[in-house]
Image (cartoon, rainbow, N blue to C red; front, top):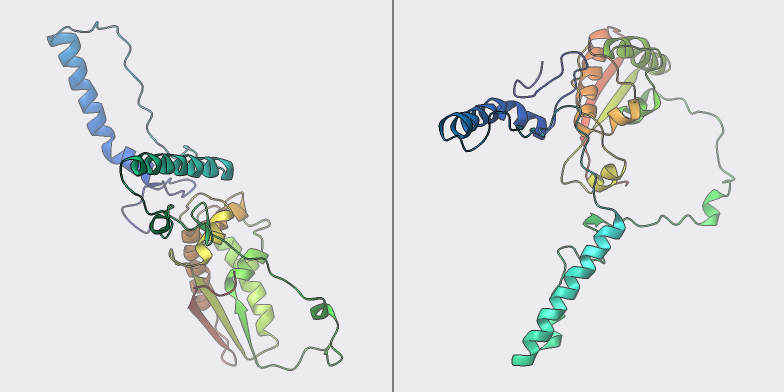
Length: 273
């Protein structure tokens, strides 16, 4: 079952978020406190009637939607209000003592410099493609050169190979992923499969966050394939577990003596947004 401290749905293998975990850990304590309060107020002190309604607990569960982030307009409005309050205090302070505006404006008045970030997210540049890059080179080759080894990006392959009719992760590995790798091995003697590692402090983190959020799931052989494949791949931990599962399934399947297969992990930093 993986991490024993995760709260997992047994049917869909969905992993609850921190709010749902806190609910499970504190549900008994919350109920006990409410029972003691009801006994004290309604039966002992009699400050409340027995038929008074009991307030409902709005506890976070699996079905609770993820909180929405502020829109860009709301973030800009909040920044303007903070600047207004700051300059108002500066104006009041300058009435009682001399203020050095040059010294004041040397310091940042925002948590994230606007020149580098937009609402706390790192600004991304626009790639300029020159027109001559599209011109066909006179030395361009149209035939595939003879090779003995190929290197494949495992994350790109997972994005490309959709589950189709596969119902479980085991079927996806046996019916879609492994046949594709087998086809690639037919033309070479060695295949290197490279997997990505997703770091929280990577420059790519802001780019991945813009793609949206999904539901965290446990990746095991008998687990059902999620209906929304792209939504599943938006969660870094889902992809990490899927890469580990597919790599193990591929190594277990491989038994060709005249071929070589290598599966490795690479670190992601700031290259290639």
